[in-house]
Image (cartoon, rainbow, N blue to C red; front, side, top):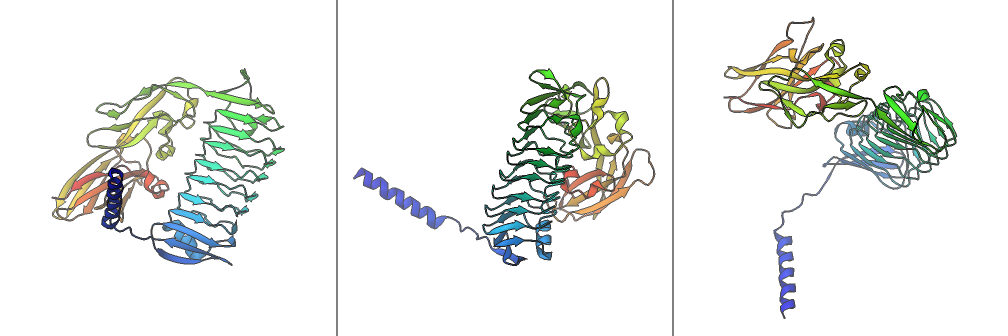
Length: 429
């Protein structure tokens, strides 16, 4: 009787939960279109794009616009056998799911896209040139076991891939297939590789190479650092990884010396040393009245360069300097003052950046996500004293404004959200 009471109580609770639960909004199709002779795409209002049908899919005007503007995730369903050239060129989706019916991926199919990870099913037997080149966010990729050729430039400039396992089925690695893979840490060359054309890998983070092929792998021929990274095979220093061998690398270590730290507090420990090519885990820094833009390396070298604006947490070629590495925080001094009943003024001084600049950008919005933000830019036509600029912003009384800043040259301000600072909040009185 006691057990019967427990069961009835549980059933009653389940029914109560079902009837009182808030209704779940159904995901609906926002738009649809044709992307092949027998294929169609459906864009749902949650940002998911589903592609259904058979045969090959290719570009269409609306598919191109949708994949660049609205889509967050792409699901290609079974039945699709081929993705044509440039189908997802500059696609903004961070996730793409491919079906086991797929056999071919065209040239530049995902070039300049925002994909983070990609699982390539073993049904894929061919991939066109530059298919995954310039994918700056791509960190993980699994290749098909039935792929025969790594085509020319397939991963060129996709520098954030950290591990690349070339399957045993691959027989040929074409020219520049592995070029500019700057942050690659581990490379595995499959047993089936019979031919390797040269690539300038520029892989400063590479620390392990497993060569299962019958070929010798020359580090210098592939542009792999051998001076600042010492390579050993079976404990012996070498710059060639022989067939069937594994090489391990160790980068040169430098002492870090911090400069311009008056009034600066750090959120976390400051590293004392740095290994060439490996990301230094630098803390965020704060200073009253300033906006933080990351860390600068070796002031004299970068006083002649704009490349620091990219905010890499490693020393780009600066580690070739002798002695310690000088590290300093980059700041923009800002002040916000009410100018009139419907305006406030922002004064921005970038002299704390200690580097050549082309200008300062300000964007502001009443939405913390910065949606529909307004942007103002001011350029330095000649080298000014103090890099100081003023911005006047129209505002409404009682409204809270979120303000972000960018230090840029003419190119980098258009790269998206990555170049903007964290928000400062100002309430119009």
